[in-house]
Length: 434
Image (cartoon, helix red, strand yellow):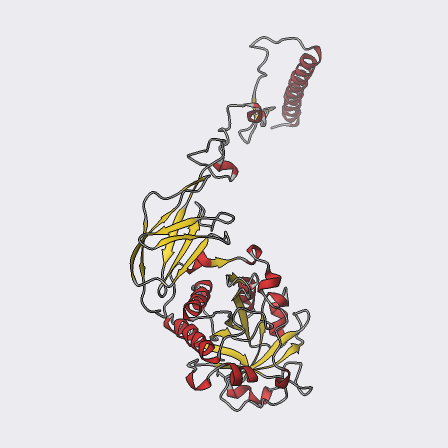
């Protein structure tokens, strides 16, 4: 193409672009004038000429027009707003909640829990349960749980009494009362576990539980021991923690030389006797494992009999779930400051509680053990009758005076480890877990 032809082509393209721009400006001016004058446009004039751009979009289209269409969205239902819907309402128009009655037995007892349609215990209601040919039992503390003891073994039928604002099951619930305790995990234990937000933890959980003054002196170490020469013999250094240790930087803790951590999963309330989950359990468990720290678990007991010991062990197994742990599950038998519901147990009963807990843990396929101070072992347990496979000793001095066998040693409660604010318990393990 010669230079004259090129000039004519360029001129033609420029004229075309100018014509398109003029048309666009004219269309915009017309719409603007129509809005300002408020005149009604004809059906033909109201729809501007559409220009299809290269990407397929319509030039000048109002992409938010659907927001003005009241029929575009489905009407919002209570479920779509995250609320529950109810099939029935009472005479005041209030929703009627459906109830479910759960019942089980461990040993010569019936354990009843009343839950709502979410599976949560219903609080604040004085429910009454009738056990056929036995009597009526009332939830006097209004926690949604009724524990009926001293029931003869056999088959029973339970009926929940009418309660305003609730729809109770029409059919009775059947339960078989066991004659003797079996050291197996209770299937419905989850329904009897409370979150700490549901309780007065200042009454239920004692922070500063102290060992006997005769079990500590000024020679105790307060830092991780320097045991590099013994690492070939599988001596490991560790900590034990609970919610009282707050937020933990597990990566820093690992870098400090911590090999293992025994983590509290929960406790039984010192006053109420409720099973309560430690609010930091899962955070600590996952944090420690992610950092490459081996983990075990402990539970602070206030069980007063074998049934409660099985309950506590069942709760631990349920909380652990499918998570693999490296160290045993320990029952912490120390006192709760003298006012705990189990502080006054005789040595025989306490030993039976420890054995029942450990046996249930072992029957669930986990390793078990018991934690106590030297004086607690000697004065509050019957060592010759105790069947715990692992012994965790608390004695705060440079060299323990305890003469019995022990597999772990907690040598101070005043330790310091980077990554943990404040004091922390320090331990040595001789279990050979690498």
